[in-house]
Image (cartoon, rainbow, N blue to C red; front, side, top):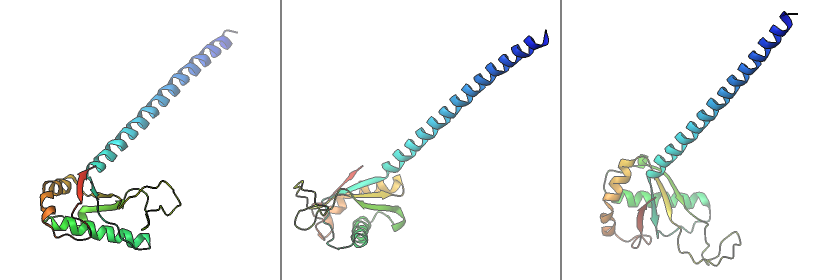
Length: 160
């Protein structure tokens, strides 16, 4: 008779301890997940630090998306290489137009009737590093001396 209560007491003690360990494991998993999320956010902020946005750059009239993207990339390369600050093709990671495309008659192709008269969408340029961005931002005054091509006279470049 003495053994049964002892086994029950030991079983309750083991169950309670297992519950505590399970709670501690769950808390550790939550802390690890929060750390991963924070690290991912920091990495995303660091990546965004290397971005610039080019405004008032005319868009290509090409019918296909790939052709328009290639024209945008060529235009960005032409502008950035024209600054003569040592930017190479490897420094440009990504070139993307922001917003919905407006056709030549000022309508949105998807039938959106917002009536927005937009001449061109801004271009997001993701650069390979902070040094490339700094070189570009410090050399923007040269941009005004570039010959006017494809509507770049009024173009502006900003941090993102």
